[in-house]
Structures are given as C-alpha cells and as structure tokens.
Image 1 (cartoon, rainbow, N blue to C red):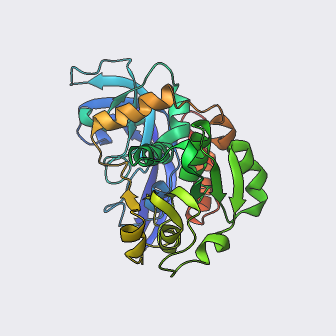
Image 2: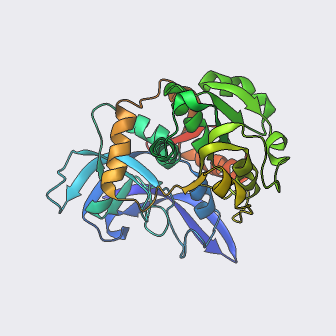
Length: 330
C-alpha cells in the first residue's frame, strides 16, 4: 500500500526534505503496521530534519518521534486491526522511519493503547514534549513538592515542554512562575495559568553563586546549561529541579552547597527509553485527571505543506506552544 512520507535526504553535503510516495515494503521490519493520522513537532524532530547525526545516523530518513493512528496489521496478539494507538519515543523518528509518514511499522513493545478519554489529535497535542512535561511534574511530586510549599519556576515556558508544564502545574494548584525571553507572550502565559513572569536575566544573574536567597520550592527546566546552574542556588530547602533539555548547553556548573546545606535534588527526565508501562500511565493521566482544558489554545495544527517552516522555526528557538501535524491535510 502506498503512502506519503516526509523524507530527508543528503546531497552534496546538504540536507533537503520533501513529501514523497512510499510503499509499505519500504518500511523496516516490525510487529505492528499503523496508519498515522497525527504527529507532532518537537526539538528532536527539527534536529533530525536538519541532518543532525547525533539524532539520526543515516539518511534518507523520515523524522517524527510521535505518532497516533490506527492499526492496519499486527503480528502481535496484543493489537488488532482497527485499534487506536499512540507511539512516542524509543527509536521512532530517530533511526526508525517516524511519524511524518502516513504509515509506520514498529515493534509491539513501543505501542500504547489510546485511552477512551483522549482523541488521537489530543494525544499529539501533548506529544513527546507534553509527556515530558508530565513526567517532570510527576518526578517533582514524587520528590515531595506540594502546592502549599511555594512557587514553582518553569524555564523555557513558551516552548512545547514549558507551556504544558505551566498549564499542568496550574491545574494541579501550584503557583507557577514562568521564565521566558519572549515578552510579547506574557499575556498568553498568564492565560495558561502563570501567576508571575520573570525574564532570563532575572534568573541568570545568579549564575555562579554558590548560594542565593531561596525563592522557588521547585523548577521545571527545559533548556539546560547555565539555566540549571542558576536555578539550583535559588531553591528552597528540600527543593528540586527537573531537567530535560539542552538548547542552552550540555554542561552544568554547580556548587555542592545547595545539595549539602539545603538538601536540594537535581532530577533528570527521560521520556524516550522509560518502560512502556510508565508511558501508558502518563498517557492515561493525560486522558483523565491531568486532562488540560487549555491544551487546544496552546496548540497550532498544521498540514504537510507547513511542516518545513515550523521545523525551521523550532530549530531557531522561535516556536511557541505545541504543534500538531495532521498527516491527511495538505
């Protein structure tokens, strides 16, 4: 069966991408063949589409680390034709043809059953970025944070992970402080639930300090680098910061003082290789108690023709909120 896929190819040391027609026979081996209705756009997708070999080793390739759709065929008894399913993470869209193809074939161990409380389009409004935000909040709550203990900072608040984190934390009753470098988006962040907006400079001015006035009980960091270094000395006793991104750098310089004098924690968040049961649990929460009323207001749906421009904006740091890709829309 033929389908359309967004293929990235290397020619003369340059990477070019276009929508091309492929056949199911072109897909890798796997247990479950899925017709993809929706995907989403994440920073990792933009890296793969730009030819970043730290994400994708070999080209030609179809990016897209998220997919939601319907089972066409399955050799695994856990899935049947017609089942509505979701896939995010693992190797999808990295070195395995991803969700920017109308068909994917993947191992059954990667496939999640879509709960009744969430549509395929809603699942891809969350996407990897949204589920990473949910995993970050889950880690913070397991570390002991609670709405009555003080404000929670979200760094990179206008991005895919950050915007969902702001909305989710607000829904759960936390006082959210949104850190953003986009002053024109302050009203939008407040509409998602942010109680206060701070600039990058407000936080980064304390980079290099061993200790500072404790301001936040916790933080969700989405950018990495100096931002993590600056947040740590501003955490309250027994506070915690999760980190899941690296757009601002991969190195974190920190004093041991916040750890040994205030007992703070630095928590890494992985949404790629965690067990399928943990992914299913987060997806179920997104369909239930953590369902976000503001999800659609922070999501821009695009068609196939708009994908290249959005990927370009994401790689430049110009993306705002979440982007959902309708694979059946030009």
